[in-house]
Amino acid sequence: MSFIAWRPTSEMRGRSAAAWVTGCIFLACTAIACAGAATEKVQPAVDAQTAQGLQKLVDQGRDDGLPGGIIVRIESLRDERIWQGTSGPFEEAHDAPIKTTDAFRVASITKSFTAAVIWRLVEDGKLGIDDRISKYLPAELIGRIHVLNGTSYGDRITIRQLLCHCSGVYDYATDKGVLRFMFAHPEKHWTPQELIDLALRSGKPYFPPGQGQHYSDTGYLLLGLIIEQVTQKPLAQVFREMIYVPLGLHDTYLEARESAVGPPLSHNYVGYLDEHDYDPTLDAYASGGQVSTTTDLAKFISGVMKGRFFKRPETLQAALAAPELPNKSAAAKARYLGHYLFYSSERDGVRLIGHEGFWGGVMFYDPDRDLVITGTSNQVDRNLPVAKLIKAFAGP
Image 1 (tube, rainbow, N blue to C red):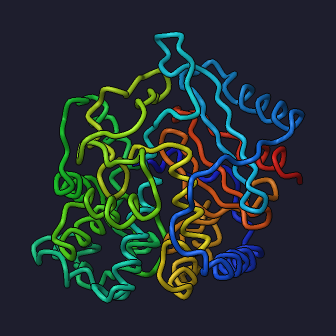
Image 2: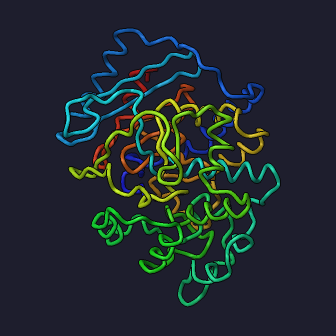
């Protein structure tokens, strides 16, 4: 559901996309020998002048009159320097400041976890990346998930197309009518099937499968159902067994699908609306819904990019590849370039790979500077100054 704030704030510069993805793959593959989760240790801090400049940027980002406390963490994977900063309160109604260790809802960043599980299942031979989803989902659902101009295309959709938002399946989470209904019913507990049905009632597919690219939470709900069908386990359990435990993510969980762990959950806002007590299933399980911390998100993306998650470097190379779309003009106009694991973006000359979330969450890897930035603004209407923070930390 995080597409509104999830979209990158800068247009993609197409000329650099392929080059920097290649660079990402090179960096990751050279580190494949470093298997196993990184051990906990104290990393060196940045110098006082740099820290002061970073804190100023965070405070300026918070100085917009809107509620929501900011948390930011930047880590250099070259020299292990780390800076962490915050601004604002844990909850707007009280004065207690937000902490660097506090948890937050990551929303659509969850999609990267779902995609990572899919690729591990591919490595294990439990599914094929180009398998049609009709192999794993009920025929009744397949028959109605993608009906365009009287033709049902559901049996033509592949797992690969769902991963890169190339299926054409309608996205319920960008439908303003759907959002109004959800916010008007904060107590409603949503199942994935109910959200899929909601999508089918709310709009039509955008294009035939593989003929374009349009962000779709609905597509990731389908991926979650496929994961559960293949593993015969709840998605929350799969995340924990395949990602959280191996990479040492101690404070991450799928909200409303398993018990909470770790530090307290900071408050998130849509404008001035505090959504802390809303039923979290409105941001559904495989497309959004995780709670995490800056440290855990950094462990995940650095583990993936540095070869500590996938068994073979070829898997990461395939996951970071850009989809080939017949509609080149539509792809060129896209505000992001969705791949099969993360998406790529360029902001003020800073090339990024990763994901964002509805409430201002960020999880990005910068291949040029070999660093990771994670954090949240806990506010739909506030974007963190990611590029400025990276340049202040590591230079232009």
